[in-house]
Picture 1 (tube, one colour):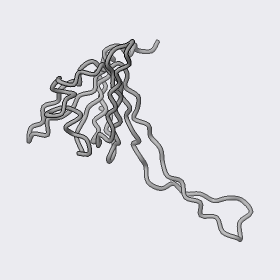
Picture 2: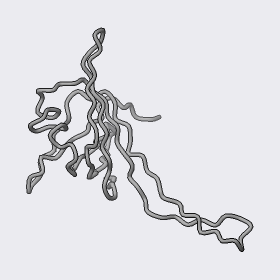
Picture 3: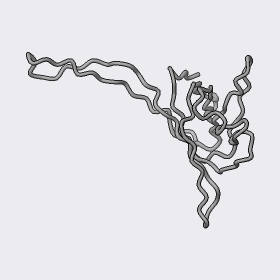
Length: 137
């Protein structure tokens, strides 16, 4: 039987010498990391079938959605996701399983999109572009 996703957390480092990780408030979805590998075609005119080799691995992206709290310390412009746009930052994705499985990632927040429809809640989506190899512990 699988584990329920309720309680999954994305935590962001404060960047200190001894980093403190804080849960980003009121997330409603965490999607990723999305792994891939570059494939290079090394076929020549002498081949009748394509030949390929694996290239660099890519941790991809983490996409998140949540309730938009623009003044909250983990989302706002002074200390939160918005303040880290374009800056490589350490994150942890902590799963709610019995072992508290964790992905440790370094990522660049590359987009944050607030939304405020007149008939619904304030929300946001954000993209984290992973840099380097994620570590699963």
